[in-house]
Each structure stands twice: as structure tokens, then as C-alpha cells.
Length: 140
Length: 109
Image 1 (cartoon, each protein chain N blue to C red):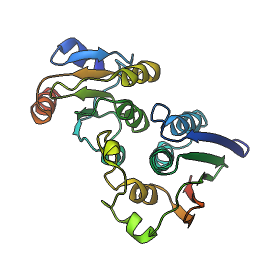
Image 2 (image 1 turned 90 degrees about the vertical axis):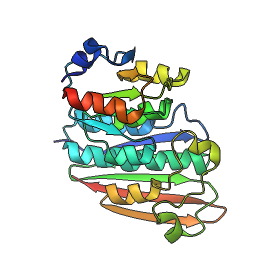
Image 3 (image 1 turned 45 degrees about the vertical axis):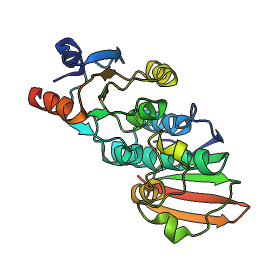
Image 4 (image 1 turned 180 degrees about the vertical axis):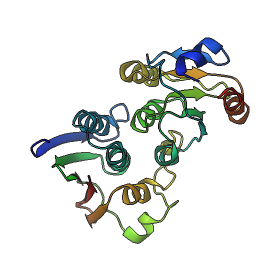
């Protein structure tokens, strides 16, 4: 068993060379802590999607991950443009990603739906022109 | 079939050896959209795709794929290659279309 751990990552905007690094790091740490593989996978998927969203839409931001013995909480905060219509953004297939993102294999409109699907709890706080904070929890 | 057996089989050209030769390939998986691959690829699958960039490598690592097979003559770009080396991801390439390539592996499993 382990004490509560808090990790913080800065995500660079528009930098695909580093996109996914935070998620990979968290995944590696969770594996070392012997967190069950199913929970590790859920964290890896939901956090990677959030990380990519920050790179594509929000010029980066900050991710805080809190790990306790029964829950992993991911807080993804950005100072991006905000989400105009959350219901629409949550629809599978809806995307505002530009074409150059699609050529990289993203922009399928599955980011937020995947985040919701693979986290046990998800909360979105957003304000146009101010930013978005997504909080996701995965229970162990 | 292990990753090493697939390397030795020479049906696909090895681009990067991730050093995970002992991994047993569970099944082929074909998809080019990374978010779909992220959520649908099962652990230790062989992932067939035409997307040869660093994000493919990142998704492969996060989804625990056994290896990636780039199809239709798609190449792994330079940043992708660097990431594959750094993250120890085994990558192959082939000129064959995705379906034919995946079927070839399927018949070997």
C-alpha cells in the first residue's frame, strides 16, 4: 500500500512531440505501484485523450494527478477558448479539430466521449474565453 | 506467436525492434483513427495502420500493443522513429493493404 501521491505536469500547446508524455509517465508509475491493470488502462486512455485535447484546442495547460489507495483523480486545467456547447462536444463524432490534426489521426470526435467512458466520474467546468477544467476520477 | 517469431518470419519488414520478443501476440487489430484505436485495441494485439507518426507510438504504448505494422507502404516518420526507439516499441512495415496484412498474421496465430 502507498501514501497519497500528487503529480503535476505542464502540457505544451501545439507540441505533438511531447503529447502523451504525462499519460505515459502516470501509467508507468501506476504499474510500479501494482494498481490493477484495468484501472491503469482507464487512467491511461482518459488522461491521454485529455492531454491531446489540451494540445489541440487549448495551447496546453496543467495536469494534476492525485493517487490514493482507492482513487486516481486527474485534474486537467487549461486557459483555452472554453467549450461553447458541452452537450454537443460530448457527442461521439462531433469535432472542431482543424484538418491538420486529422492527418495525424485525431479529430474523430471521440476525445471527450472516451474520457467519459473510461473514467468513473467526470466533471467539466468551462467558461468561454477563460478556460476549461476537466476533473476525472478512476476508482481502484 | 511471439513478436520474435513474427520478426524471424520475415513477412513484414522490421523498422524498429522494441526488445519485447517474448510478448505473445493475441490478435490483429486494424484502425487508423487514434482515439478508436486507443479505446478498442486490446493488450498485446498487433496493430495494423497507415498512421506512421509519433502519436501512433504513444497510443501503442498506452494501449499495451505488442507491435505496430505500418501498411500500404506507409513509413514511420523521424519523430515517430525516435519515439519508438525511446519507448521500446516494435514496428514493422509492409506494402500490403491493411486487410491482407492482418489476414496474413491472423492465419499464423
